[in-house]
Length: 352
Image 1: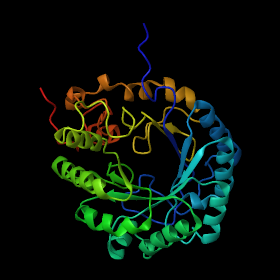
Image 2: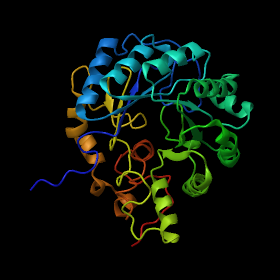
Image 3: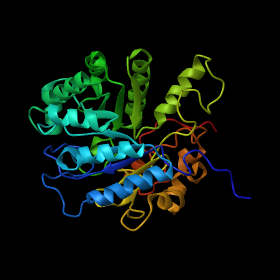
Image 4: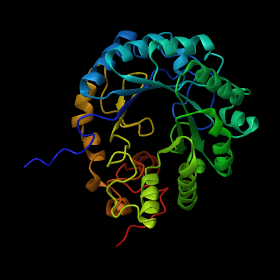
């Protein structure tokens, strides 16, 4: 008998499309190793339209346009409008550069943009601009947020935590609290692209970060989520158990019973059309020019393995939280050479 289907087996929660690798910033951690100029091998507009239709047909309703910098694509507004008309919720993560003008934001709003996300990696302008390697990036981040808010566009902030800003979480939360954002997405580094293993916090440091984020989330006027740190779900569940709010570990934090993780609820499509489990787990499993994204997501052996918690190795395979966490498969791949291996940035020891 074929086993019952699990959540996200048929369709991912979201699809990320890397519209381009062109970008005018030179961020220290850039997954894409972005460059100033666009590649002639990028998906054409008609190819992107077909991809959007296949995503909607697959049953996914959320697509995130990322890069590089999507603002470098001339068809950005068209693709937001096209996706919206298909019934997709279209979110966007542009770089904080002069390309994101009030005129562009107005056009994106009118095209139906569901959310705008920009990055903030330091409380001070000097710290943020050093990370992004462009003077004025910090100022542009806040200008974009203020303009988007005035236009009625919902917003979020993405933050990459490294050794250089790990002490800034509480001041950063206080700084962004008045901005009216919907979500603070905190990313724990995966050593891909320009990021290196030296940028990765050790397991005890990560555990401290997650505990601090859990405390901040209790009073913040915005939601808090993590990227490449699914063990945040475990930390939240443990805190609720300690307060006797729940008696099990299956759910209870107002999110999907199985965490969204690389290849499990997530698909990434590169600027050249390669279909991967995530941008931080760059294993090409097909290409949208020759494959239907649905078929790769549902049936490719890599994706199927990523959605099988019993395929995990080491302590992740032994962990009682493997179905709600599962560890970062991208970090395991980058640092251990096997996406099934234990997440090297997790301090938790499973109950024996």
